[in-house]
Amino acid sequence: MSLNLEQKKAVVAEVNEAASAAYSAVAAEYRGLSVGDMTMLRAQAREKGVYIRVVRNTLARRALEGTPFECMNDGLVGPLVLAFSGEDPGAVARLIGDFSKQHDKLVVKLVSVDGRLLEPTELKRLAELPSKEQAISMLMGVMKAPVEKLVRTLAEPHAKLVRTIAAIRDQKQAA
Image (cartoon, rainbow, N blue to C red; front, side):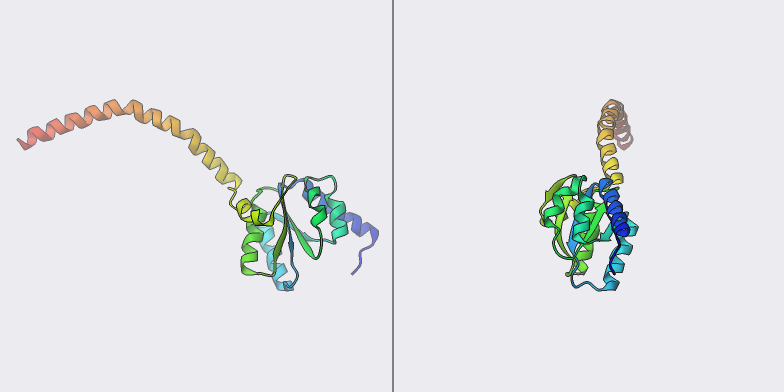
């Protein structure tokens, strides 16, 4: 089905809006995937908060102009599905990586993070990035550690005194 000019403009605007708000993007070739597989991919993308769209490459190039992902324009060749992650930079990489493990027909062609084009092999490294909640909990753990160590250090003389008195008590009871 061919799109008229207004529909094409709407598609370009929609993809441009998603790309402008995204932290990372992946373009993967979907040649050979069934409609059911693509539907499953789209459902998983909705669950994980990933924007995914199949767009003609000419429209995708226009949509990516003026966004951090303009660096992907040269690699937009063949049937590609574009996926953008707006909340968690690693979400799109986890989604595409997990799906491509189960469906070898989905081949990653382009990976971009904040305007920097990465090799497709970097997808795994991007997928290992912690989510926002995980990063906050790691930061809180690092911030909490010195305080805990200070409290343990301040409490140790008292604890040592109690252990010494208990040892003397046990020694007197044994004698």
